[in-house]
Image (tube, rainbow, N blue to C red):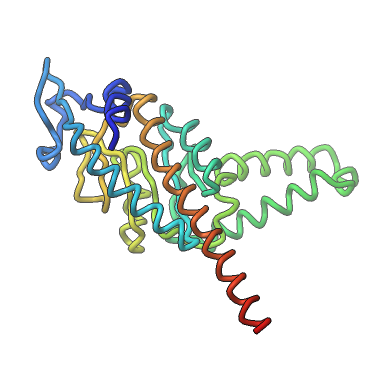
Length: 245
């Protein structure tokens, strides 16, 4: 990990944890010291977690699997949406609906309904409805779109999830654990690291910290997808060469 990145991590405030009175004792291995009643996270542990997460996410993406980004707290929403879209992965940035994973068939049905409503509202058919019905359909569309638009590309369950603050997203973590879906998470000093598979200790309240960590992870996923495309192209050329011979 370059010195430049270490500097960026420190400048983003990734090492600032919560007040020591709010800590989870299981985070002890990731804490460097206590300053003015605030726990200071060991940046070396942050880097170790980042390296493990980058390697894993790149590998998952190179196999064509889905990675779901989750971050519904105010500081994370914009970053989660932007970075997930940039690397072509689904996301939840507004609200985690109960059963998003464990009752995925219902979620897919609702996404199907979203597509139906879009076709109706954008076509000439909407003109045949009364104003009251048009208003009802628009309300239904806005509600489904608000809750599910980030998962429109999620045609199957994800291989893993990238989560900002598993304490805040405890329902998402619980569903992932129930289904055996791996979790990569930015965890602060008030979190339980045992609940996630690949913890990245760091400040999960600072927008700069969240932006930096999520961007690094999204870069790894984008790189993995490029590798997948290269492998597919090589396989196609090999098939064509074999067919000609």
